[in-house]
Image 1 (tube, protein in one colour):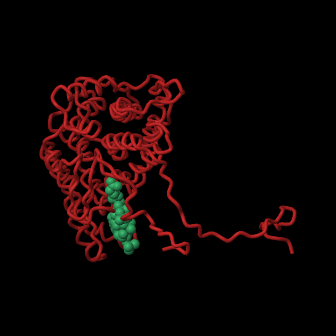
Image 2 (cartoon, rainbow, N blue to C red):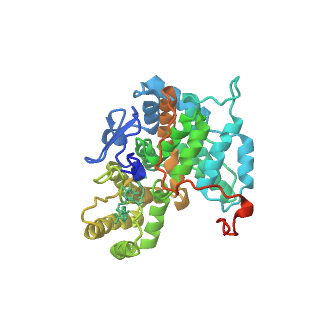
Image 3 (cartoon, rainbow, N blue to C red):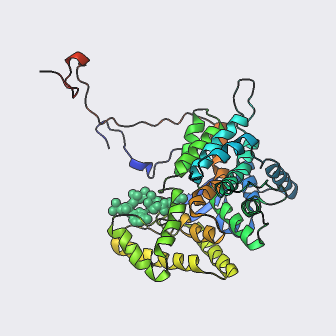
Length: 392
Ligand code: ACO
């Protein structure tokens, strides 16, 4: 409680700031549902495209509805040529997340406006953003490697087409399924920081391009989506499974955090982690190389052990980013692209939340308690010293 009697809640922990019909996080029991469907049922059974439909249109699609959505996604994948030309001129060292945020914002330049000169923010623009996000990342992956971007294919799923656009090879079913499941698991997560950011932006009546750009900016930090790339750096640093415990102890002794561990909402293991762990195992079996899976497995055990010793009263377990690292590494994705891949899944939730906000909008504008100095008399500059205080 502040001196003004207003409640101050750093980090808004436990504060309810709105309602949503999109997804529900039950942190104590570790359950995540999309429009009432448990992620444990959706992850092994539903395609990413079905989830896009479910989150944007409110129900699981029938066969022809799904076909219609796939056609629209396929038709909207190609990037405006001037944006691809601009990307060719970016420094090759540019961080993929910077490129994704910049180009996503740039998509607004090529989007039609209505009679009031405003961009339309509707479900079709949402589908366009979902369709193009993976194209941006695949194009940048090739451009920075000195290669020509590959045109998207409309006949492939969102996941398979992304892998195809990187390598020019249609991926195996196991690889495409792994990425598809990853996108399903990442599609939405209630009022997380980036989604909240998108909703705050939309609440000012900024358009969907602005709101998604804001969400991308918020995702970047390593307390949120940036942990995906950071978790990969952790696997690299651990090097071999037998070094996991020494590594985890070293991190804590330096007062740092183990990336991919801990969650504001979940007080048990993140329900998405088990699906990603299973996928990591499947991919490592498929590749005949279990390096990333083995390091991740032993690092999770070691982290649980040392975190329990160091902070017995805190409930810190693996979150979604932990097993993202071995899954995406086994798919051959570069470590600095992991947070972008997160965005390629979460763009669905962001768009759904922006549309939900706009459908029943009220400006989001909280308060802060002022804790600065009390007002003093204004001193004209001629009467101030070099340090800005009143001359004697
Ligand atoms: N490693 C070591 N210590 C941790 C970790 C961790 N991964 N996570 C939390 N703690 C400790 C903190 O140091 C803190 O200790 P203190 O009370 O002694 O200061 C205590 O647990 C509470 O930390 P908070 O940051 O207040 O807890 P919060 O609920 O906000 O934490 C967060 C959530 C930010 C995700 C945190 O667990 C973390 O930093 N994890 C590592 C980064 C990460 O994986 N981020 C991805 C989250 S999932 C997502 O956004 C998709």
